[in-house]
Image (tube, rainbow, N blue to C red; front, side):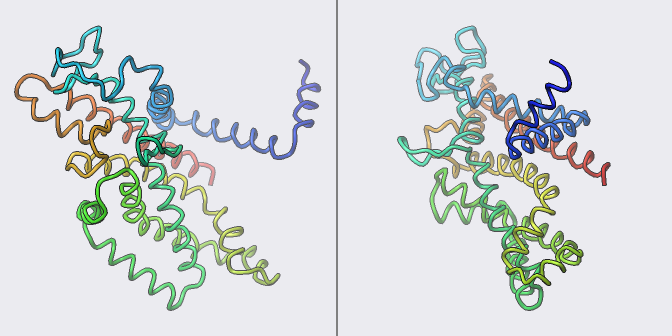
Length: 311
């Protein structure tokens, strides 16, 4: 195909599709130009792929028990070994990744797409961005009230705040999402407020105000799109924090109710058998949590470094 034909094919695409592919290409070029971001992307993609294809990659159900092989080490039958109930650790590990990244289980029959940790971060972004935009753009007494309330929330230790919220509402995937959203909202709001304080002084904001645009239009159409870079990078870091929080809550018995393949509860159960020579049930979920959090941090750090180079 000649370059002229390629140009003609691209020109024949609808404008929105052309813009999408152009943005996708630019985003991938930024990612691949950073070794740090590339390593993080590989780690995150690994967990996303195994979570997506967990039913195909898993030889067993995550709750299937083999009483003849409890606390078994890696074998051909069980590549990562088994837990105290003889459940296959590889199956539980990748189904645990599925809960974190791909699906939000509400009950045995009801679930939503997108994982528990990501839903929590999305909710915190929605609430935090709205509060930050309102506080930063309107200022005055509204800014004082919102920021003082959020400062009061941030004064409570994060783990204690998680414990209070989940203990009050009960252990479930939906309540974990609510806890992640509540805990993450103040940090998002402060970030968006600081960005808004800078952007609201720009000429195009003054022009929108002169045209008589509404406050909502200025906040969500003029300010928010121009602040999306730092917010996206911060969101990647927050997904890592949310995964770590899920692991902590599961370890404390406040995560997903059993027999869900919760990584934190797997570590908590598995640690009881470390000294008896069966470390596998605690080792693999610990590695999974650490690798996914590190991968997201590397991806965010690499993106931040590359975007700062073009400023």
